[in-house]
Length: 81
Image 1 (tube, rainbow, N blue to C red):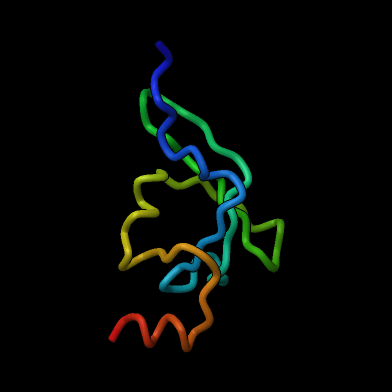
Image 2: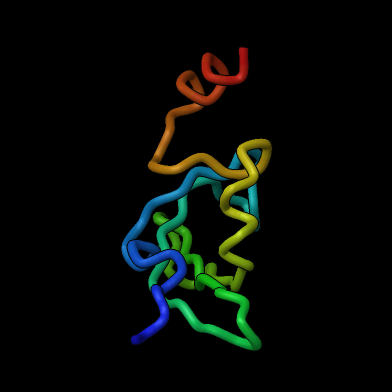
C-alpha cells in the first residue's frame, strides 16, 4: 500500500505572508519536492514571477508568519485582533 502524500493540495495554493518577504506579501506554490522525508514548496510572488524561494511546507502552518489565501492588509489586521 502506498504512503499517503503529505500536503496533497500544496501546488497552486495561495499564501499571504504576515510580514513582507522579499518585498512582497502574496505568493503561490508552483512546485513541491520531498527531500529526506521533508516536503518543500517553491513560492513565487504573485506580482513578480522573478521572486522565488523554497520553504519547508511545515512552516506554512505557522499562523504568525503565513495565512492561507490572499488577504488584504485590512483582513490581516482584523484577524490579528
